[in-house]
Image 1 (tube, one colour):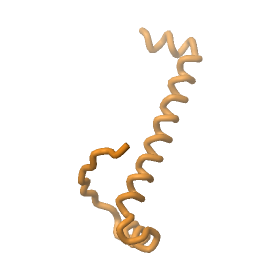
Image 2 (cartoon, rainbow, N blue to C red; image 1 turned 135 degrees about the vertical axis):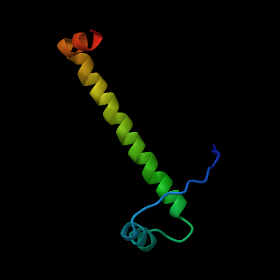
Image 3 (cartoon, rainbow, N blue to C red; image 1 turned 180 degrees about the vertical axis):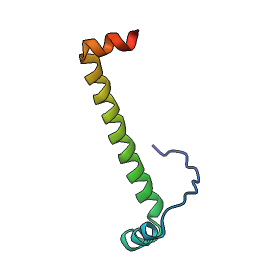
Image 4 (cartoon, rainbow, N blue to C red; image 1 turned 60 degrees about the vertical axis):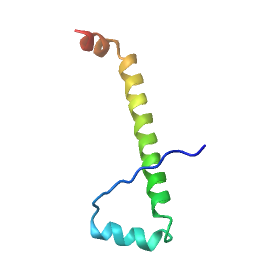
Length: 67
């Protein structure tokens, strides 16, 4: 399934840009950056889920949050 695309302008340190140019093939930067961002978001979502599960198991903390 194809998804809609948007243009995103970002500012990154020059050393990161140089590493990106050295590492990623010309014409593949958007694909690479998109994949890295998506992986990072997925990891963050999993972390949030784990934290919510941890909190929900802690009855004292759950009661304190309700107050």
